[in-house]
Image (cartoon, rainbow, N blue to C red; front, side, top):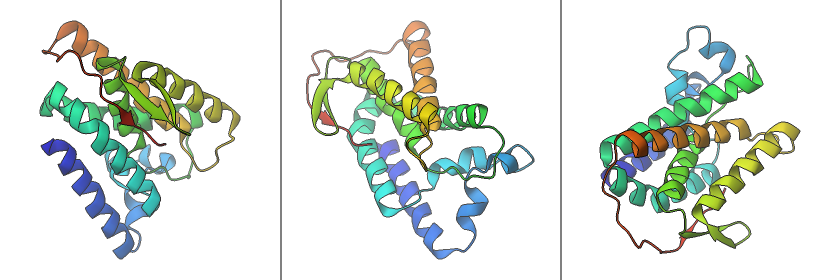
Length: 200
């Protein structure tokens, strides 16, 4: 739980700084054309920035709900690796599919989608509620989100949303989880059937 709370604290502090320091967001958000030409820190820093109060609230709320369970299951080290590497993977797929642009990308959504994916893989039958309140097994919900993000990413019907970034987080999280499950197993508690909620 300590890493989850630490991540939430860092995101909140950074969001406050965004509102106080002119140019902070532009410097640390991911601008593909700049990141590929020397601003390499943006691949990491973008995932701690947010665009609005609602943006950070929803992301941190989801992280708190699912992150505590996932951190407890994976251990703090793998959990932190999952979060950071999936954030990088989110940026990577986004840039691969959208090209070298000057459009800023920011937010923890890619990393948080990876946490949700990890939850779905570890507790596939646990019920979560997907907007507008539809209950479904966690693993099915992950597949549903893949389809939704792919659809909106290809059609462009959600302007201002980095759907391919979300998809990158899901894919990276799934790869890491299956690697750990195959090559480095940890003890997993059985019988987990509690209800969780997700908004995105």
